[in-house]
Length: 140
Image 1 (cartoon, rainbow, N blue to C red):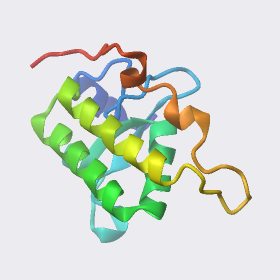
Image 2 (cartoon, one colour):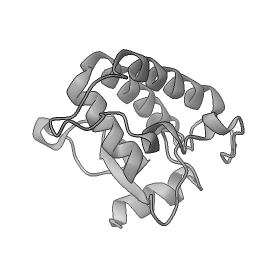
Image 3 (cartoon, rainbow, N blue to C red):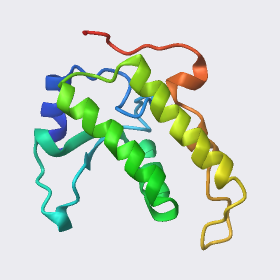
């Protein structure tokens, strides 16, 4: 794991759940998402990052490729979480889940170039909102 990712995990008090509400596991580790892309001058630092799991990160980029408007909404919530300086609040996770559900409804029949279904089960499962339980570390 990159040192910036470890630093953000510690600084933001992120434990067991990423900024998008996905559960962290051995098979779904943390990754660093550039809020402002490198090709647009985004740096790899605390002010330009979101801690996502591998699954959440892949899903976010699928959303970006299919629905820029919903991607921008998600990225805006991730910016808010970054700027507050601590793990996501319940209301932020609910907002993210709502945006993801809109995407899933709009694109439920979409296929990848390979012909496989675009929205995999792993993208829908593993979010704490789907469990009906919030297990974030509510520091604020």
